[in-house]
Length: 250
Ligand code: PEP
Image 1: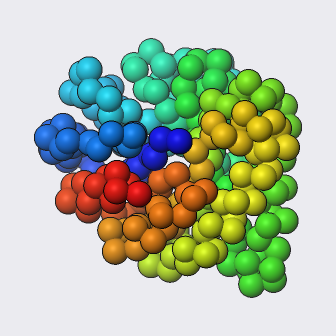
Image 2 (image 1 turned 90 degrees about the horizontal axis):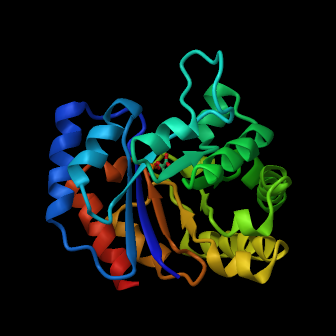
């Protein structure tokens, strides 16, 4: 299965910073079997797509609205993203769940809207610190996946990417150990298999949560870890390039 290194820029960088980062990225030779994705803020998506031209590097959005169009001030539809050449979109990130009240049901609808527009949803799931401490992490992730995937067919599910992001590890410097990541990724893989073996073998499961060049090798070496969704380390061209290199070596 392909390895993915996806950078979630969150609300960082400006127009010039985006341009410079993309220029640096275009200089890299991306190892075979590795897909590189960057998710800049909305205002810079179109320029990034244009600058990348025919490159295989994918530009992703960080969110979209589930409806086709309407009176939803401040929102952006999947069709709008498609029209500017966006090919992937993060949905259900814990920051969207926590600060913007995004529910599993809404996330499921966003996944459908994206797939209808041929955009790859990068679906984020993961437990809070209290839930991990209480030993409820498998239960929580199971419920998140089942709720978001309930209305989707196996054919649709085959076209998504899952990112396991333990919330206690995001932006905290704490990382899941290689063992903690592998056991949850294997659990997610078995949940995907309940929608069909073809789903389990088609869907990359990325790890996210303080993944950096110094811990990526042990995380990416796990059989069910198919790359990373990277926050902080994706803002720095050198660190992001190193993560791409490490993904290619595992
Ligand atoms: C993220 O927000 O998706 C993320 C993984 O962030 P960080 O790498 O900074 O923990």
